[in-house]
Image 1 (cartoon, helix red, strand yellow):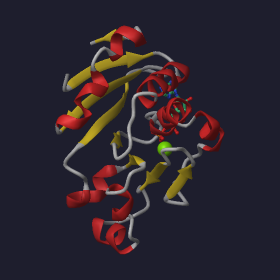
Image 2 (cartoon, protein in one colour):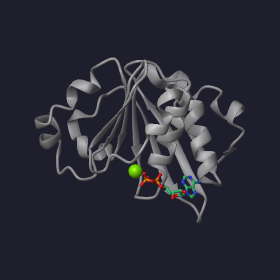
Image 3 (spheres, rainbow, N blue to C red):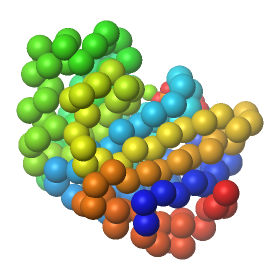
Length: 162
Ligand SMILES: Nc1ncnc2c1ncn2[C@@H]1O[C@H](COP(=O)(O)OP(=O)(O)O)[C@@H](O)[C@H]1O
Ligand SMILES: [Mg+2]
């Protein structure tokens, strides 16, 4: 499956979806989280950590000021927030690219800032407000490697498919 659109009706549901996905992630995978402030990107990341690196899930916090948070694994989860960075040149200068090619898992908020540094193979997830506690979440894979992540996800998740 390459594209899946679903709706969550609470922050807890979004976190649970993140956890289901997190338990499927493998080394070297790259997740781009898109959408406006308050969309649920950090909330979803909390779920991803709970699924991928449960003993480090309590460490999840918005890395807006730190730019990158690290959640020990194995595999290590690197959580980026590029909101405050101006361009991909700044990101390249800071040397973050090497994490994208490493064997950890990268979760990136505001991947738009990456420009051409965005890896070709990745899973893109877009969060849109659809009401106070409601979010429309679109998951889309780029490259073969991330495709299996979406297979059967809604069966176990039991979310409303749009
Ligand atoms: N269905 C939902 N999914 C995710 N967050 C939700 C949902 N409903 C309400 N919220 C609230 O929206 C906010 C999302 O914040 P956050 O995850 O920090 O967003 P972002 O990282 O995208 O800026 C939280 O306060 C959360 O409680
Ligand atoms: Mg955030």
